[in-house]
Amino acid sequence: MSWKRLIFQLFLLMGVSRVAWTQSLFKSSLDSDMECNKIAKWLKRSKSSVVSIQLYTPEQKEGYCRIGSGFVYDPEGWVVTRSSIVQDSDSIIVTFPDGRSSPAHIVHCDEMTKIALLKVDLSNLNSVSIGRTSSLDRESELIVLGNSLGIFPSVTLGTYEGLRLDGMMQLRMVVVPGNGGSPVFDREGHIVGILAGRVLEEGNQDLELGNWGVALPIELVTEVVNDVLQHVKEGKGWIGLSVIDVENGQSEKVLKVVGLVPGGPAQKAEICIGDTIVGFEGESVPHAQELRKMVRNMTTSREVEFTIRKRGNELSRFVKIGGIP
Image 1: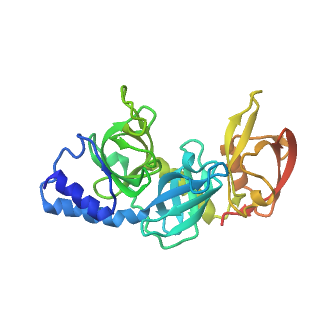
Image 2: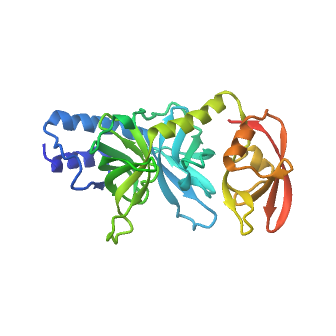
Image 3: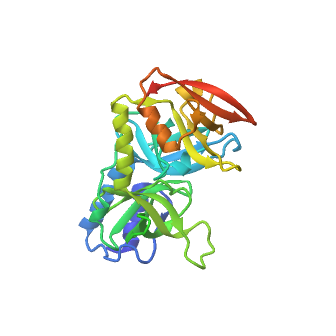
């Protein structure tokens, strides 16, 4: 079967108007209708676990939003994406391929991996099937499903080129805005990574298209997410606050608030997105990762003091520890 015929079938199947690919993709041609039908059936099944993420901030004009991609990790409403997509957002809307939409809140942003875990108030969702990057060989064929330039769901085809020195996966594929946070699947339909960004080859003047993709291996994603979900099940402490480490002009270590759960303990204590946290429990503020660990190990109903800086003034905010909803 020719690639033209396969691409046409993908158009019909996915209901999209664009499929991106490069010359090197799927060098081992599809020799039979059986192979094509296998991929077509997998795409039809797997697209239900992929989501589009729209983000709104107070600065953005009405009707405009940032977009990104993500996927359902757990059927009970747990969605994974990249933290760079959802940080500094005033509201988050997750849209599913069947047209349903749901508000989402940030439960956790991991500083090291840049993974964000979101919660939507839906259940019995179709979640991804977890694979292994160790099962991939160089030039293994991959498929990315996501939100390509606002077209959702879209299909991008590519190949695996190996692990980089920083531990990230390097992918040979066209990466466009909106694909960030997209799941990367192998030919068996298992997720093997999450798309983190794109790399432009020297001489490429098209800032909208990257020649190479960079993805975080699924093993790191599951390690972070499973750790958070374990704390949820164990009823660990939670305040509905996402922060990142920053340094001010005096090299003072502080935290910046980048996410709040509506109605959560931190918001009820009048902590706001954009606030600078300079102290915790009367001491200098710990690193973001350390603060998260400290809060998780605290009992619910305990009250803790945050010192925040607003417009040059330092204020105390008392937050009552709750349990993750």
